[in-house]
Image 1 (cartoon, helix red, strand yellow):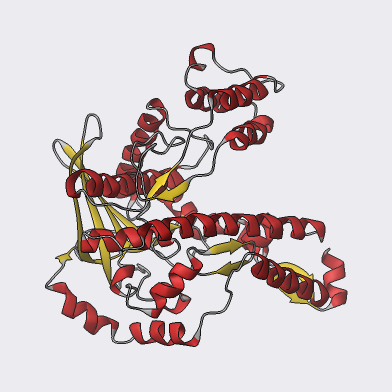
Image 2 (cartoon, rainbow, N blue to C red):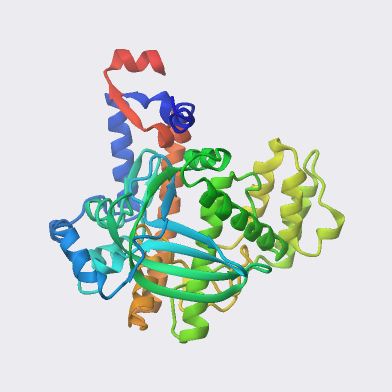
Amino acid sequence: MSDDAQAEAGTAEGQGPVEISEDLARHLDNKRDELFEKFEIRDEFPAAVLDEAEARTEDVQAEIEDEIEDRTDLRDLTTWTTDPIDAQDFDDAISIEEREDEYVLWVHIADVTHYVHPESAMWEEAVERSNTVYLPGYTIHMLPPVLAETVCSLVPNEERLAHTVEMHLDKEHLGYENIEIYKSVIESDERLTYSQAENRLDDPDAPLHEENKLVHELADRMHEQRKEDGSLVLNPSRDRAHTIIEECMLKANKAVTHTLMWDRGVEAMYRVHPQPSPDEWSEALREIQDLDGVSIPGDTWDDPRKAVNATLEEAPGRQLDKIQWAVMKVMPRAKYMNDPFGGHHALNFEIYGHFTSPIRRLSDLINHWIVYQNDVPENLIELCDRASDKQKDAEQCEREYKQFLQEVGLDPMAVNNRGVEVVDESEAEKTL
């Protein structure tokens, strides 16, 4: 068995689906329908939207060939994707090079707005839905899967249209020396799962080992720098593969919104996260300090975010959830706005917005359109409010569905990781 195969064998997916009875399956269907009605979530796509998506997936290669002349050709650049094992579409890929005095980091995002634009039925439907809703074992997509899982998925060994963010980073302080955002054609060399990426980092003879090692060194430095600057890191034990993707996407999102704000002077859909009041932060820190075996380092009290980061690194594992919950309770909701004023408190970024997930978030789709057109939709404020409200609905729907799963004796995490399989009553009773 190869290292990659072995890595997957020990995962939740290797245990097979959670088995449930037909009766329980009906209960779950009814509960979902009830929640979809309550939160106005559309589970079915209108026929016109599906027809349009289907039509856009025909003659893909011919369309790409027509486009190549007007795009930057990056097909020869070593490029790969890293996603969870159960990912259905791959909307971001990375490339990396180390040069004498700089790193060059490319983040390639599926060029969704090439297919989904304001004149299309899919755009209208995306505005209606505003995001993909992820329930354990059940997904309600923002865009028709036939599109998201084909032409907008950066699968290996297939040419794909992309929107590339090319960042030249100073070797010493990792600041942006230069940022270029342009339409491209790429060809991914490989699709890695997170556990495969971990293996590649450890195996010097594996393909993409050097590239993963280099991008991890860069991502790790970006992560440490972000913490030093006062960015809140609620999950201190994240593995290396997740660190790579998280830091590269944060760097790209930040690069795009900085470019729009400072270089182009156009509005965008910014992600604004207000800060808790000083009293709320004090309350959270007191609650953390009172936990058994937990102590907030004395020199960090002045900056609550640094205090939480330092405490999470030293605290016993059993207290991590309680520390995270104490912080989450006082955190205001982040929202989408057409003005970055106030910045993103948790990340400690003055300007921030989303760009790297246009398949599952309306905000990213809108920002792709703004970057491409250098102009904003007339109803940008309305779109910001819509995206904020629908995100809140999606989170509440997910919470209530998880609660229901627990009430009927199912583990939401197991359902999410392994899926469910309906078996006849006698078989289901054996396994419950």
